[in-house]
Image (cartoon, rainbow, N blue to C red; front, side, top):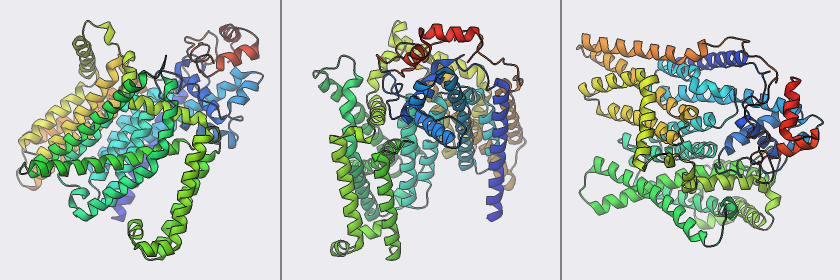
Length: 639
């Protein structure tokens, strides 16, 4: 066992080492010294937004647009800036330093470059997640290494090493949430299921905060329950399930109540807001929530019908309602914890202090439980009421309750003491997730004669992508499904079909704005996992037939074709990488910027509409109109 674990670690480290080499080659090829405003659409928005957060100001990017996205990568970048400045790699990272610097464009350059480099950490996180997920699905280190290399050399992933965007962060955490739900359902104990499911909820929340392209995961995660015939929840006794459900309900009651205060910012996110819109918005939000709850309930009904039949529909519906409630409540715990953790920033605030106190109180409670010989926190809480009241645990619980109540009251009375700038950003992200109807105007359906024609156009676009660029992967899936059906491996067929349709669904959702080239990573990571699962299934099928003494020449040929096609797919994916040459791109800023959305645009870079404020800083410091100042520097080749 120890030797196997060591071998697994070595394969993982090899995958990370190769990914580091690939990232280094890309950075050397593109040149970190190139003009940082050549494509400023998002680079400058995120860089200045992170500096504003470090300065205790509104981001000027997340909460003022009609998108309400980018929060989690913005927080990641603000932490990267703060740590790099503490280590001496950057100058003091705050918006105030940018506003007071004699040459703000020169100072901003280092923060944009630091943002490009920080993308390498997300790149490695993607490779690590794909490796872990592939190994979980296949049990093979070799196939997992193969999958991680596909992720490392694919242009859908590599492109984000050269710009600051939220797609890579959102796609990675979306896949991570799916991975954690799979692990939850295959956990050995009920506590493991709860821990993995709550952590999956946190990953999903961060993914949705990054980009709402991850919304399909709200529908995909419950479907994983249809792929597993037995889970720790099914094996647990009725008493344990009921107790777990009660704890989940109490935890949600404890965590959710203060978050209601974030709704006070919602009116400012709606143009021409008036009180007559409140019932409409409430109905739309509640309708979306109820639709999700109904969907989860129906998924569990289908699962129980398949497993236990339809002997008593009333009992079946009751059982399904309990299972669905447990899933939603535990997932919501992770979602709520992600919201609270978003309040923790490089600038120490009262939220950070409160969470630190809660963490210390929890650790102290765990230590007390251990010294008393309790096997778990649940056992401690189940102690007799009189014993709890006279023990030291009661004091800790009372202190935690008082601290929580104080936070609630202070947040209501003195919101500025808790970093209202980040509250606004979190509130905007939550609003856009809970009210997706606000984004319908961003779709391109108005360009088509009917809604049906619009969806048909999007479907043709998605199918065209698979036919042109991913036909090798489709061949692998088709061959694998045929062989699995011949061998009657129905459970594996369901998993392969799930991953195939999940990838296509994510790409279809991302293509609704006809901008799918920027969003390919969401589907591509799932496609890589699908191919890995297919290759593993074919190899295992051949092994079974060899051990059973009924190996066939036909199966061996199919396995060989699948492996060769998979290798050729890796070669095709690396085409863009192999076309790069070190030092081919020129550095310097000898031409005006090709876009000005986040540089001099009055909406994104101005202050009138709640933008980043970069436009005003440039005009004040250089005493010229923003684009004139930038173009004057471009003529002299200055950054």
